[in-house]
Length: 468
Image (cartoon, rainbow, N blue to C red; front, side, top):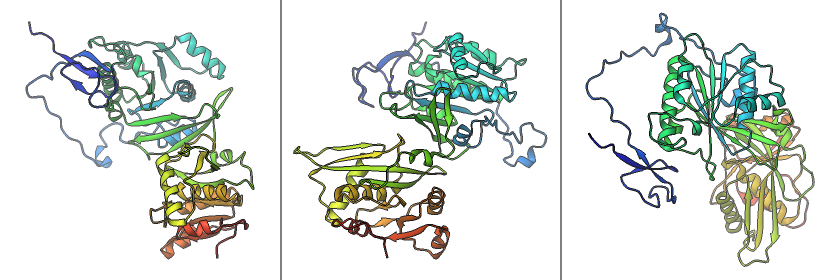
């Protein structure tokens, strides 16, 4: 009898080696390599072959599902993030920190769909059915016609999905790390089990046209636990973000085969669960104080949604030999670049000061358009001259100190005008067409070409002046 092969798989990155080691050479994690049975080889020989189909939908008149509508959940922020609803047969992976609200959000989505006469199944591998009922009762959703199950065996779940007498529209697996396939000689949560379970469930879901949503655990770095191939297997990857000190929760798309990426949905954690925030800009700026040095408003863009957030900066004398740099909600490397440009190109001395930067509201901004707003907040704090409360900023700062243009300025300006701002400091627009598009009624636009133009407004103790 042939002896079964053994592989050693890193539970952090999924790399496979032929022998055990204390440290993974791929991700440098310690004590993460576990012995697992090697998967069986694929059957040899020729298959039956598959006939290709036409790309044109008009040519598919004789076939079913030529124009399949999306499942609209009724949770507008969730529908926005998924690209306008759930596509039948799609697989979605949602990850987030423990206790951030993943199970609460999905239970609300499932109950909304069930109220629209969609057949939904919520499978929990971490909670008993009665525990899920208690959470539904707290959210006021206990009357929804949702089927609940507590199971961890993929064989049992697949049997329910393939039951012809029970047409299913949506199934939630909470979570994929608790599932197991009995033909794999590994513990639940290992790389081999997670990969095998996901592959089998996605295969059946696409065959039956069922939307399947996986809940994934995350590592200490905030990445979805398990093999990286897990994110390649699904159609959409969503991250549920939020600071425990704030009531806001951000649902962000990092991959979507049926819609735009980097789209966000904003929720507010309340007693009745997660409440949608249709206008996050007004909520993020609700507690902003005017005439305070070190505060500037950024007209940002998350996916297709314009978002106005407050950038707060504090420049203080440092008693230490190496000044501190603390950043919340922004890239610390980009802050270091803006500080270097201010010193080298504008003559602003900040190397001996402690710098604290915060994006208010618990949201994280990653686009380069925030450079100009960050620079304005730093200059305001360093000179102790407040930025006028009716002004917004956006623009990318180059290493030479030039202010570069960013995408979709007209969308940002319209959002600023809608919230009552009447002045915008933006990069210079080159084309006449761009200038015509950027004209927003009631909004004075001030174009600058170099960061020194902005620094000049904060030189000395004179009030902030407008540009000519």
